[in-house]
Length: 417
Image (tube, one colour):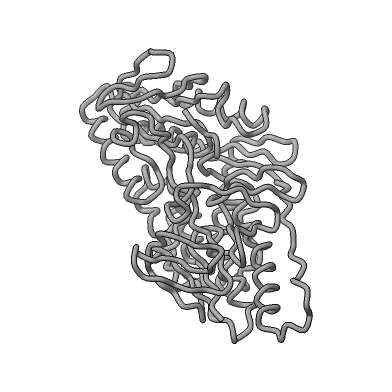
């Protein structure tokens, strides 16, 4: 029996690691991803300012597994009902039970010129390009930088760019503008959190423009939907997400059992999930990981049932996913904003929480030394002795705990701009 997990992002890696420990020997676990490495996406914005963090936020996928079969390939199509995936446009992989965990792609909404002239932030190459272009703009003087979309990703990018300008001594010659089509930054989050984020941005000299939707762009000018224009030297786009190409760009709506069709599940940003309470689940690392835990239990039940003699008759009762967030968290340069329950935190407490979340996640996937390196980068330390890393490694356990339990930066479903 083949059990396939397509994608090794937050959802796919969490799901596949659980399945590796729980599936019976008769089930062959296959993990497919186009990259050799798992990227800690919620830390990607840091690479714009600190390229050295790259090693700490990438984990070789093969290092995360003991018995799973790893295939490096691009998933170009999934026939969920038939249980067939197309890899690299030609090869077919037939599976008995599967999960689509391919994440989301950047949405440009067919806005004229935006895809051609703006840089998204989904990969390390994007961060490298943004950094190089911004440093060139700093050198030229009077740099005008525009970030389109003030969801969590846009907030983090704008904060990182402001910090980079300060470190490069370019503050007086740089104007950073953050655009949001809704009436507030972080538009899908609670009011107190929004207001704290807005203040953190303004404290760093970032111009925040809400109710400002992008209508199009050319090589030097952004046009807003009210007809006004905004000149720029660097344009970063974090304005929303769409489904993966393997699902024809769609993010299908799935109910709380996370079944796409047949014995195929869909987990994470690749879908619009409605939980057991009928509530839409936000696209975030936290949600993806929690969904993956439920999906793992459901895959395990189906596999056990399919491998049985069939005498049980009825299909197994699958678990329902219910999302109840403990809080929200976003970086703003060297600062952060966190909301835990009804309490909003800024300053060192929020930064410490942000660092803890990143370290907890890396530890959960067995990347202890990368977690230690991330502490050094986040808190600007000189490093942690090898003996300390070895001690932490010995206590890391099997990765069942310590995952991202507070939502961190991710493209928002309707983060537009």
